[in-house]
Image (cartoon, rainbow, N blue to C red; front, side, top):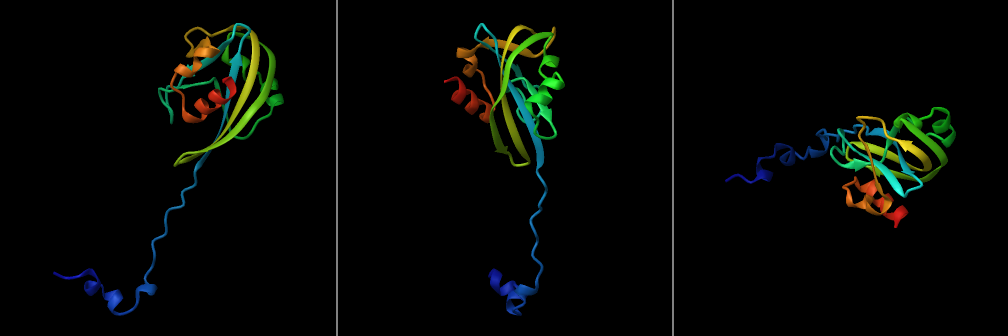
Length: 155
């Protein structure tokens, strides 16, 4: 039986340091900005949806707006981003509650949680958005960053 060190010509000739070293691939992570809306109504309901594709397929999430860069409250209001998700919604108050960085193996996520108080909310027909009481939202399976946020903010 031949021992590996005996079979290695580079080791025998003391030329190991002359050999090329394979560099690890430095593929750049995809950068995504996820704006989640924690929409609460006057009846103590919170709105959420089931994710149909992507990294968290079949888990639940809050209504989402994905942007290419960080956005402001003024941007949300000027572009009617939240209003486009519903047939009808009257915004009472909106503010950035928390910003979290979350790294996955192939993606870097910047997650912004926008708290919104609203009235007269009507969900679009055939839409994926549902509502439940704030006290029961944590019974649904959410991705870890959302689950942590909900636990911190609603407890």
